[in-house]
Length: 250
Ligand code: PGA
Image 1 (cartoon, rainbow, N blue to C red):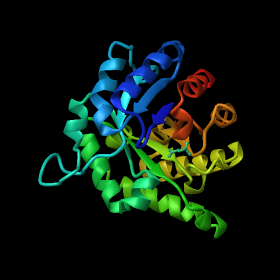
Image 2: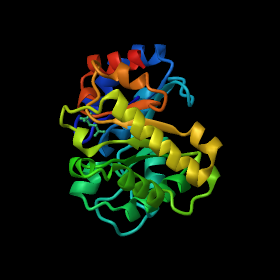
Image 3: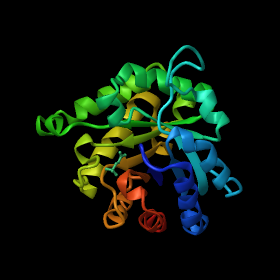
Image 4: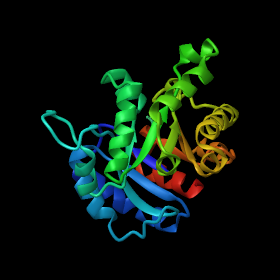
């Protein structure tokens, strides 16, 4: 269960939030990942320290983006080693807002996935179609292309260290959630794409999250689907009561 805070919350607000969801996270049988803005990373990492993080439960921290180089003259950018140093174990890559507003392409997504793995961060790779693409019946073509470009030339062992997030662009920040059937059908297709490239074992163990207008009211129906392994939550993750309710549902 991932809280993607986007450009919200100061360090103080972030730490206060962690204190308020800590009981729900401690009782949860899922891994809870907080993705704050860069300036709050260290404070959030300190606040979650000591929560027994394993791949199955506990609290962990993610960056919302990274640069593909480890260091260099890239004003305003943050690298994988810097995120790891700040306490991140994960990083979100290729979110549609990055693609839409900041010129991210399938090629930069691919380079960032490699950079994340090199820094021992788990990449959370976002793919998703627009409303126009869905209307034109292009969803599978678009998703297959994004998937194959993101993981191009990758060894199976590296792929097993990645997480995939299906984030239909038409559902992000719109209040228009995918129905459980749409999420399941599309995520089953993504698992099929993974099987074609990396084989059945890697595809079966792949974690595929759903993201786009997830709320306490709809999260349960989504998570009940066999190919929906978790949720990446934006606006409904900003309120601790609402996020705690989603952790409990998970
Ligand atoms: P939303 O954002 O929950 O506000 O739709 C989801 C996302 O951007 O991952």
